[in-house]
Image (cartoon, rainbow, N blue to C red; front, side):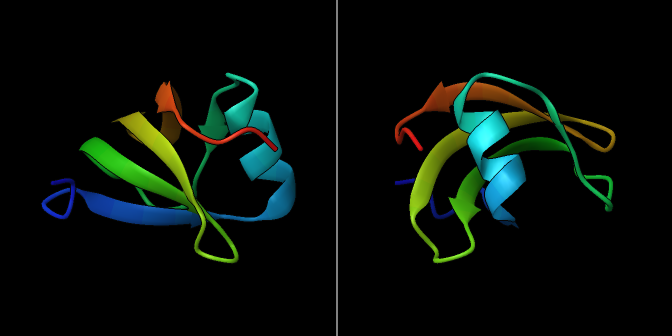
Length: 63
């Protein structure tokens, strides 16, 4: 159901921050909603993107 969204994997420190509701900077600008994963490909949730910033929208996993 979410396969149409782009995906991004976060390193451990950024994944933890994102799961705690913090915005996380990414290197490549992305537009729209994205699926967020950790480095081991565990699904963490959905983020809204704003240029090079991931904004937590729905967090499904706690780290």
